[in-house]
Image (cartoon, rainbow, N blue to C red):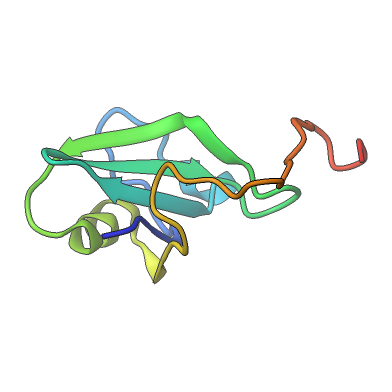
Length: 101
């Protein structure tokens, strides 16, 4: 299974920032042999994927059920490419502000 992406509507992680989903409304998730992995993303400016805002939990049930339960995932869709793949000759600059281009 490829990863999935979705809209976050809640933050249901113990000892976490309660409203993290408000500024990081996109979620990206995939599974390993033993764990589910969620990465927060912003849904404005450059749609930044915030690799420092990651949640990992041991697998139990399905990936889809996990993101719905923990992140209130809505509009769950599959990613087009397998996790870890890239597209040749596509450059995404490391810009911080939208006015940089």
